[in-house]
Length: 134
Image (cartoon, rainbow, N blue to C red; front, side, top):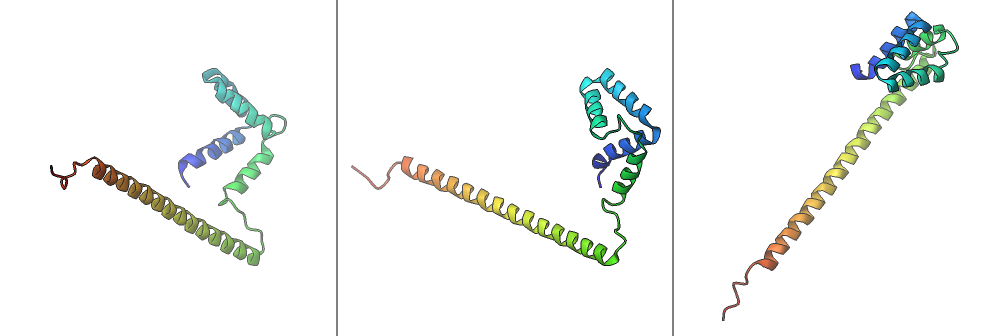
């Protein structure tokens, strides 16, 4: 996973470990330096209910999310089925993306061929007619 995708969850975990005071400090600093950041943090705190409850429940949820996105259900047959289904879906998504790329390439080639045909037709129409002599 890229660091761009993980830094918000790392920041969230870091703030959760320090408690509600850290969230409030981050919000105040956000308002001081660039007010939309403070407003975004406030909205997130309200939306995630961090404003009204302790952060303990969020620590557990953040740990659960970090475990490869999906935790084991405890049932090995179901986990094998889930892994196989996810693998199959990823393969289908890759095949579909390949199909879309081929479709885009075909459309680009068609448009280019149309352009070249039109250009050749214009060149024929504007060229002096060498066969007509007086």
